[in-house]
Length: 113
Image (cartoon, rainbow, N blue to C red; front, top):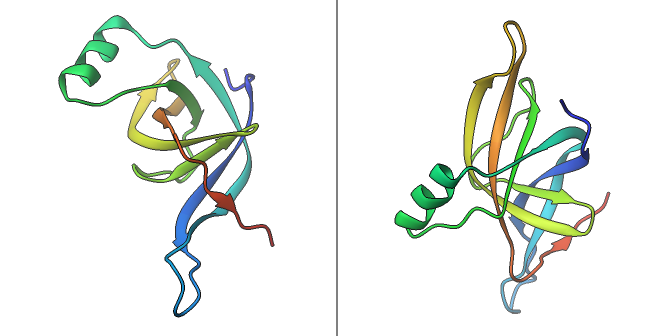
């Protein structure tokens, strides 16, 4: 169920220096989160287009992972913004969180500790 890979959940923070242009960076919040890739249904795709939105990737993460809309996800070298979060029941007793992701056109720097 969560066998597609590992992702990192990030916050977007301001890292500008006084007197210089604003500079936003991604700060990792939760690393090594296992996820499963889901296919995007036609219904979901058309609903997103009707709302002038776009969904590039749909993934599932374990229920206990803290993630909210407008958080950021890094998968490999790709960066995504979380557009929507839905709690789903996968099997009778297994719950997960389904994340609709939008790929970033301009990647942000990632702060490492």
